[in-house]
Length: 330
Length: 307
Image (cartoon, rainbow over all chains, first blue to last red; front, side, top):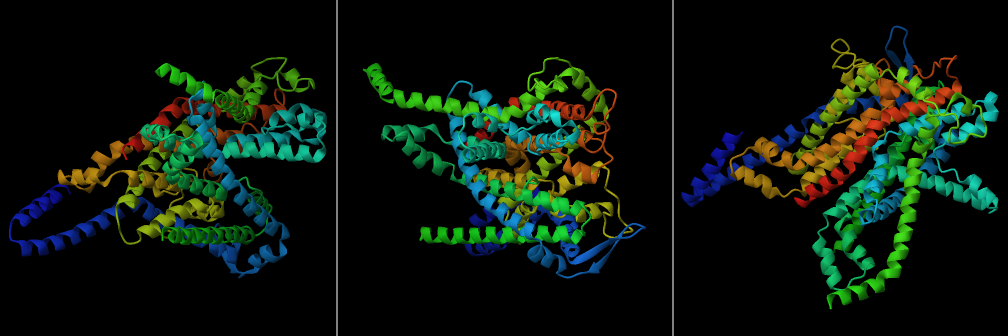
């Protein structure tokens, strides 16, 4: 490869010094072949993923779709047999199973609220952590913890523990153990003691638990934005200071535009993360259905409906955004 | 003169700054408390003595301190087997993921070829479609992995399932690493490679000698993410390799921690032992996080300076 390129360079340089017309022709042909080589190298670099797509991923998806239209009967000797059902389970999940539709909409609504909240939250805390203050290193390390524990193993242990703690025969112990096991911020008791009224207490308690959720889900985002903030050259801030900008103005006119690319990355990451969280109410419901002996097509059809709805929403949003961008560019 | 100016300036901003500093401190303390609370209670609980379990006045802080649960957990975690399995899986999968993500990310960032946009769309699609949607199909495909049923191997209960998925760029969140790498390489100036080409390097030469050293810090970051993911993974391991013991699955999958030793530990004890085991499992990761956060933030920003 190395040798080849050397030859090319040599040829081009000699060609330019020689007669003009054949040199031009030659260069054109050369550049075409370079282009072809470039595209060939592109395939080489992407090869593992291409093989993965063809050998595993696409078959997986096709099989999943096939399973959703068929009854899968497991044979005694191993293997399985398919029996065509058509849209039966799709009809069932869409028109019979009320809980599924309800959970589908509530999970989408939740997503619409949570994605912007997480992006704004992480933007805010990244800029706070970027400031100079005592104990900054410790605070950063603590904020970094949720990134490391991204699989939710802690949450899973807590859930298992809560189940154990709710064994009826040990009811008297619930107070002693149950509250210890829960990792959400348990401020209900504290608020009740303040006599704020039940509604307000409930609202504050859910907000506090929401904060716990959001903190745990924005670790990676804070980290990406923090790195982006440090890339901004100090000279920009100095110039702004000389011009007499307030801190507020500097934030909006310098910081935000400079990290706009990372904000897009963070938004994409957040959307993906909320797509695939396996502790959402909808997924827990589908899991429950697939483990209690319902036909596999049932669970699969629900998953596929979920993905199609989300893809339509996301595609629509992307389309509108791109139209909007084009217009604003004009 | 200068000091006078400084003084004036400081006076003007003093109140606002003070309020902000106070607000910031409260905020950071609050969030840190929210993050750390489960760990603090887990640590306290792991030192419960047997009497504390039945003492209703004991809520968080044990009265009868003992290392009983630590000993029990350490004995039942089988660190010599499960720990080595987990380490091999996490290191192997992490290394493969880093290199695949770097290669594919570079390919997508720098080369124009037919279907490159579709390929990038596929990367995003692998991220957007949750694993559990196709987990059964994947299970069956792993059971008979090959072009036909006769020429197939069973990948279940082996490291190969993990390694192969990592190699194919299909591990959970690997698409994200490809995406991050692509963004990173897109941010690098093309002149770097052009200079290498002028110096007579081929595509591979330019990639290995010029681009890889620049991407090194980014690669370490991605390795850490991939490592931490595999280290604490339970869903994948439980489904595709139920017979391989890994540290996280030791706690859950009906292994030692479910079959509680009645004489020494009861149902609640099992819960506390699980909590203690989680502490043991995440301890290395927490140490990594503490060591690396400074380096990682710095490294990403340094690599950004190359822009």
